[in-house]
Length: 203
Image 1 (cartoon, rainbow, N blue to C red):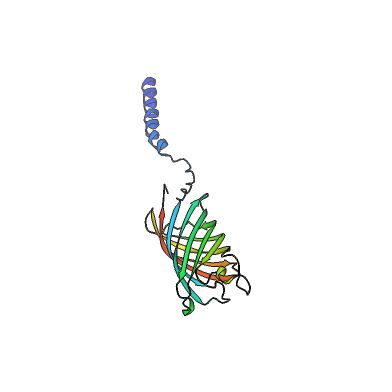
Image 2: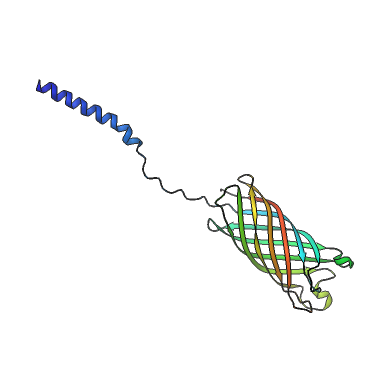
């Protein structure tokens, strides 16, 4: 009798232990917080409209059209280093028959807000140089160099279409240039850009 009771008790312990094994195996451990994936480098090719205030005139009173290319390399999840080159032109400034081309070569940091997968707002500050050519270039008037300091600050919004492609809905910048113009030797310009963004590597 005692032997049967011991056998029965042992059997119950075995059954209980076996029944508890799946539950123990399925008990989740505390999940580690998922880290965001590193953003991919990207190339943007855009159309650019410029409301210009370029020498020798002292007022912002004519438009220029052109394009730009920028390359952004992320060094953290939110910050990227951006290099940008662009050019805009007007072949008949204020119906004068004179032409002007403005080129910019800029670089600097960009902050991107990546918490929403569908859109990516960003803000940036770029510095570098600008160059003019054409009949209205400062050198044509004996004002000095056709190359001057330039700074652009602004931001924009990218619409993410796929992992590799996005559409830059808009990018707006205040563009400061310091060309000699017989007045105040600086120009306040406004830029608007839109175009395609291509991303490279893993994302």
